[in-house]
Image (tube, rainbow, N blue to C red):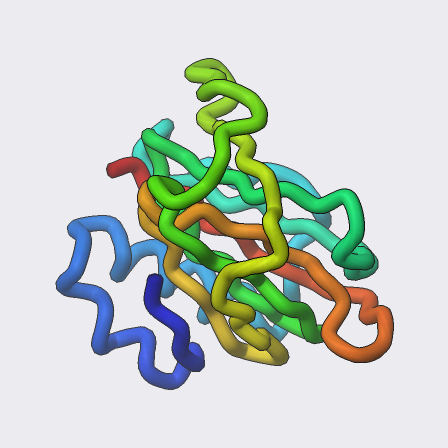
Amino acid sequence: MIFDNIKNANLYAGLHPKFKEAFEFIEKNLSNPPDDGKYILDGDNLYSIVTRYSTKENNEIQYEAHDKYIDIQFIVSGKEICYVKNRETLQLNKPYDANDDYALYDFNGSGTPVHLSDCEFVILYPWDAHIPAVIDGDSSDNLKFIVKVKV
């Protein structure tokens, strides 16, 4: 897991061949965010999901993890907590679904709370189970880019 601000995105471009392109999409769309939806950037190698939503309470939440994609979750506006924990330490709740690229794990009240707000991102690798969109203090109406980078 990596947590930072978009102004430092260039520090991470060399970590994956598609990270530079992923951060370019984010930076290009900051001032005029596109409508909600899926945006193909390079076939199934790189795409972005743009979503507007309200943060959720931390009851009845579950960790999710992916095998095929790295997530770059970028908050354009709003604030939230994203809990992160190594998936190997969690109890599996729903086995991996290869079609939708996710498995679900029980939230046992533990994990690292990452507090995200405007122009901050978290990079989540396949071993990083995560619970995004959790209320941080008060409920927030968020705009987020979730860029999916094929492992």
